[in-house]
Image 1 (cartoon, one colour):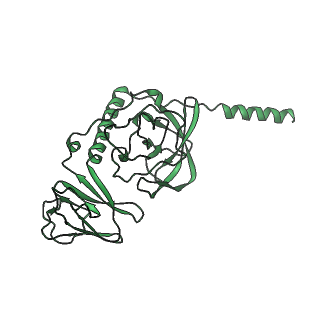
Image 2 (tube, helix red, strand yellow):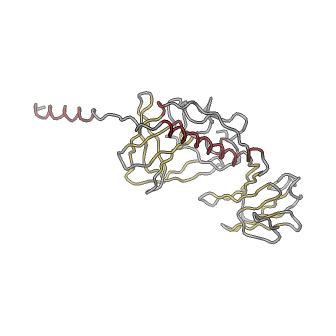
Image 3 (cartoon, one colour):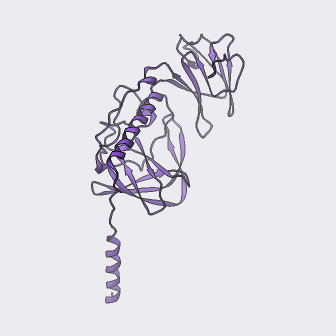
Length: 300
């Protein structure tokens, strides 16, 4: 190789290696602690909304009877509804509740549900029945006990101590075009999210990547990830976190101290996506929320 070309190759190689990995921007510790405390309270509210779920049932086309008869497709606590309280009728995307005569069903305004009505939610005593839907054609009926103690006093899930080493700079490597990614969900189906790129970061001197989901123009990216703590101290399924969206090849922050549990960590009666297989980290991320041992969630 001519000397001039050899010299040029060396310069290019050195330039390629000289790009340093930045530290995340410094934070005001007082403000950071307030943000963290507020986030911990928000996670308690997730528990308050999830622990009271009594059940979830697939809503097929046609009539699905409900009541306290255990032989019915939707069986509710006997102290709140008669043996046969009515049917939930599905016709495509349209759902109608058809109450049985005299059934003690109420709407949110306190009025009695006497006639067939296209409602998204209604009450049978303290039990709320809620119509849930996925972006595809799946529909469910979810029952929530609004008298559950967790509604007013949700437990505090344990977390790892906050540690600055788990707050890292991450480069956003955008895809040429956002692309839909289908991931499995806990109900045996799939969900589709828009993957906008990858977050590239370093832990324990190892470069790692996580596929990031978001929508074009959104100011937030979110990831679903697994790590080596899932079989011991954290929820066996996965955890989630969010980062500030940035343009391609610019830097944002991944703060694993804010790694949170999905609703399916607290109840098996949920509709949660699962992380893409690429988002499994080869390290134990000892940061963020731990598992809540007193409850049984989705078990992968």
